[in-house]
Image 1 (tube, one colour):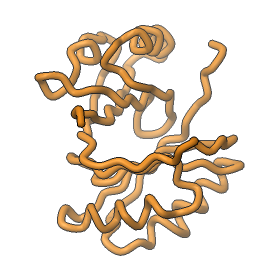
Image 2 (cartoon, one colour; image 1 turned 180 degrees about the vertical axis):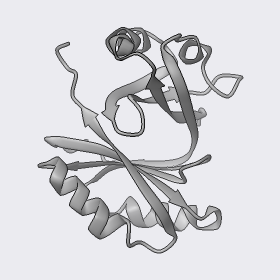
Image 3 (cartoon, one colour; image 1 turned 30 degrees about the vertical axis):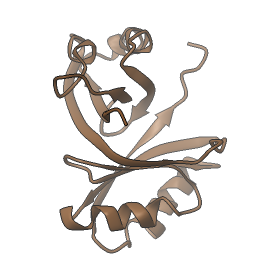
Image 4 (cartoon, one colour; image 1 turned 60 degrees about the vertical axis):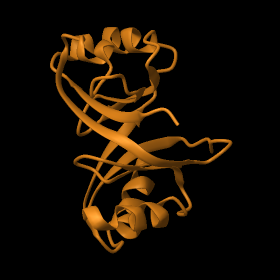
Amino acid sequence: MEATAYVLASISNGDQLLPSIEFLARCPDVLEWRAVEGLGNIMIRARMGSSSLPATVQSLDAISELRVMQIVESDRKNPPVASIAEAFALLEVEEEHRGEVFNAVKQLQGVLDCSRTTGEYGVIALIGDASFDGIEQFIAGTIRPLAHVQRVRHCDVINLQGF
């Protein structure tokens, strides 16, 4: 299995968001990307190069901060469920319990993709619902109360198709 990672990028200049996304969409190491609002501006799923991050992502001048979480294990719903609203939930989890939390989260209704990762966030889940309010309620009522979850941050996905 090839090494992949989530990379959460913050763009320093909002005018550079669309050009940065257009650039990333052409990069062979970028498997997928989503514009997000919250902790960063772009969530990227990328192949890991010989360095800790593909040079193409590092080369973007508009990026002010990168958070890299290497994917250890992943569970994607196949086929993906279509949702009106989507958000990434980034879970801070006690190191020794990341596998346990990953196994619990990936089974939850509404979780479209779940990955156990290294770095700051031990589990990253893509959540889908009919509304962003529904996603916030799901995070507060279902994910935050899970044992060993210390903190949950989330980034709403912004649909930029057609731009």
